[in-house]
Length: 122
Image 1 (cartoon, rainbow, N blue to C red):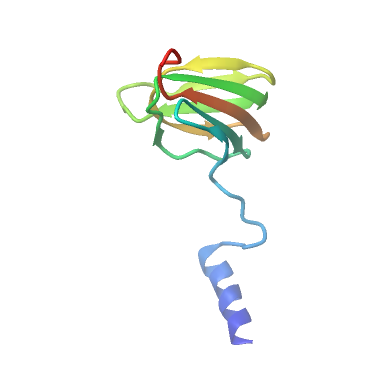
Image 2: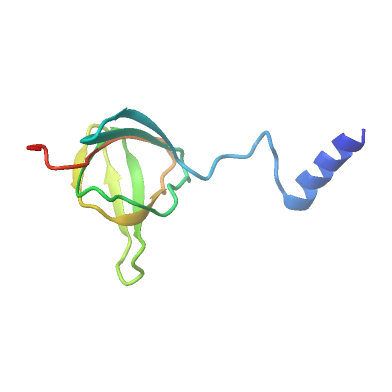
């Protein structure tokens, strides 16, 4: 009984619901990795974000399995954020950067991101 009361008290006090709470962050799964390539599957639920992170490899492609509305927020505050509407099947080539990716749309976004770790001629 005390345990139930404490959970209910926390829900009211902190305005949280363990059942209804949605993740504010994206998820990622490593699909393939070796010394030359890193391939990830990333899922961004509506309203989620990646959190600030750095891409250290200079060559990167992103393929949108399920597109949507994104905002790319650079770590460098002197640069402006970029808003992007990506359709299903769109592919982008992007440079290394430090940024936060936000899903500002109403739908889930799923991408396959491939980063080349080194020059392929090695």
